[in-house]
Image (cartoon, rainbow, N blue to C red; front, side, top):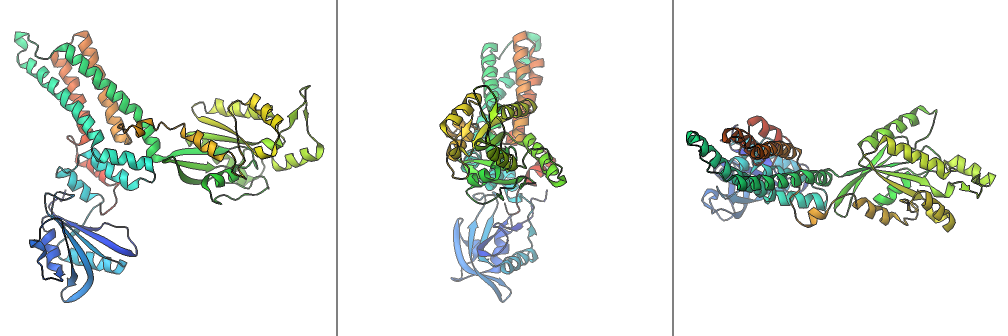
Length: 486
């Protein structure tokens, strides 16, 4: 790692804007910036105290590139722990590149992706899990993901892991000490107290591992597939949920021939809604491909909204026969309606059997067009059904409230630690396996040398999370996902 170099990068998004920020970090950052900066008050930048801002001009020889504000952060009191200079210039892409090229000519090199945060980690300003939370914070696009990233960046997760590791380390030291006196058959570690600690660590690890299901949802959003026959109002429902005309709506069955996706935030949680092609038998090649993709999207979705047209249902007579006026039946058949409740319940059973792990929400659309009697009949056969009108928006809020019930936001409200990173999740799983081995060994009365092996492995996996144990390959993989300039 070329951590002795002085690096430079654009810290704000590329493109034109009101201002842009160019960041330098390294042992020569102040000297390089000072050589290109002419203060309006004649100040020498390198002599100014830390955490100060100065007005002046960036000069390329006698050529003025821009009027700027320069912020000075001296080591170790900076983001990276090194000398850092931030140049706030006007947001012209030409000016940005002129200043960056000038800094490169003066001795900087372009920063790699995430290199500023990597240096913060290497200089002890952040541990590894906090550094990863920086990327999550930048990527957060709803309240819940922002809150989780902030909690992790402030060290909530790190502190919890560090505390467990320290307590385990203390007992590990006593176990290791026993090995030095193995011939004298002494015990320095109280086995009862040790078992209590192991059980407490086991419970905390299980809670953190269980929180990953919620954390993953918060971080990535919940994929929700809207499925049903053609022309039952799937695209209209998508538009109602998004509050915009995102999908094409038509009375012609089979309008949606491919999936249409968009995201919104509900109650601070991201949901990714997928409007799919209507499921039916068709000879249309393009529509058939769309229907095939519908089933692929159901596979990937966590929640499936099954939508049917309640206004086109054939109502059952007392003798069990289906009856509907011929003209109404012809129109219903034409638009994809005219189905019986039995057909719908059969199709729902087929979906449940094929995707038993999926959360299924049954929605009766066009509820504003049916009477109370039919509503009661539908409710009798489908007790969990939600009634709404995608066209008028009636009942849509009830659906969104129901969607939130699938997300355990209690832990978030209580400011509990939530795991969102799959690397942390895997390390926790491995640590739990080792802790369970230690617990078994204590129960069986195994010798200290055998217990010590599993304890060392558990401590290793704890260290992987916070960064006490790292490799260049691991750091490369983590920071490669950062944006340049951070």
